[in-house]
Image (cartoon, rainbow, N blue to C red):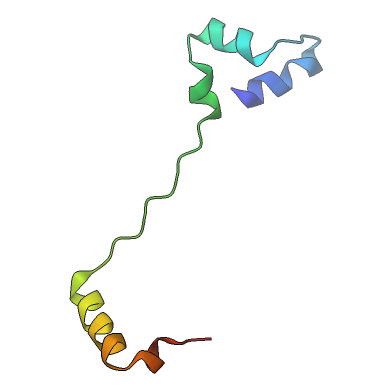
Length: 64
């Protein structure tokens, strides 16, 4: 949709995004929506032993 809007001035037409969305029957928020990244999934089989190790030896938790 944005590429169509950007190509119109080259053809001598100036159309707003609102008008384009009306013509195509699309909500404006659909055009501007940016999906968010899914939160990382914690693998309990790996997380529990690492957490136990850090609790047993807190100095191992310091990486920097």
